Image 1 (cartoon, rainbow, N blue to C red):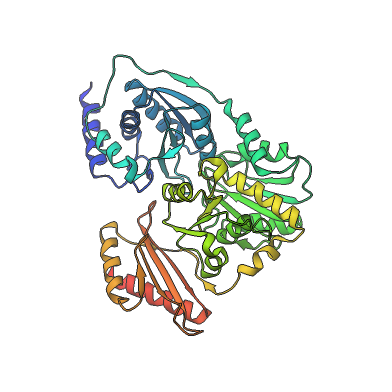
Image 2 (cartoon, rainbow, N blue to C red):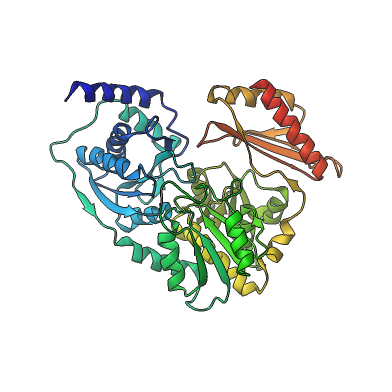
Length: 469
């Protein structure tokens, strides 16, 4: 071992021990300053050891750094005596499918999902495509990665198996319930230069959907829009195309196609919570007894619509999946555009969500704006991102608890404060604030029954956070 490599390795160990790249349910950071090949090799080695896996599935998104990180992950897993099945570039939902398809002991996906191009990361799954989070082993993997790497006498081998795509497309087509050729809807699909196009194109071709493509070429620099489709102005080009082509719907994917964003026939964004309500009710025909899991940031209108069938969850893949399994829920969703299905072993699938939505739109005979209209009540801020140093985030929660001590509160995820059920009309409001699991920021949602009150409470919280941070 060279002295230079040894210094790098020692530095990497220190970084891993003190790192902020290990989040609640995945590993993510800026490449190469926070996550690099040395870290990836150690994490691949540690994940194989923790999973006690003979074989792991490895996939990667289209980011520029993904091939290098993937190679390092495979080397680390192989050094621990674990074989790797490399499925090539893929969407994260396709990776989940492959872990079960190959009956592997687990899997590692190289992706930073919706984060900006300079980020990358790892998602680790156990056998059966069960997510590994902080409560399920991610901390142990961090500890193992910070120690001495395991090198076994028998080195693992790597098998290139990109052939899972066709089986995955057949699975999605069957799960969508769409018969080829039955849809007469015009659709615009924006893949955002991520990997979504490699699944969306054969899926919609198989079902003979009339669609036009935007940004289907995979390009890890994301030249046309940022990987998060629902943030800022990232849906503008899709909206313009929907209007220009007089399409029925516009669909956009994030960088690894585990998030979905939708615009209606007017080119207007339809919030993901409305999409979940539409998917659950199956175009106005609510299915008796079927549970739906939603994250705690949903508006009161949608929560009330779900009624006793709705189950509130913390934000995050593993939390949603656990809630759905316990309740045997049909579907789950987050305001961020993740949609989870029983058919996918409670994992996300943005392409399947899009297919199911198209079928509902066809069967209902209504415009998407009409299906969403019943949920457009109240005044909902949407997610507000407030950059905060990670060291003060817990302190902020404590100070807010003191400030709103006379209101109804809970701490399922961050802090939720409610002044609603007993408040008179015109004075109802609630908010949730929680630390981001993927960025150094706090996420804030505010809702009120008047626009003036919503703006007032939002500004009150912004000023408080700005002053206290």
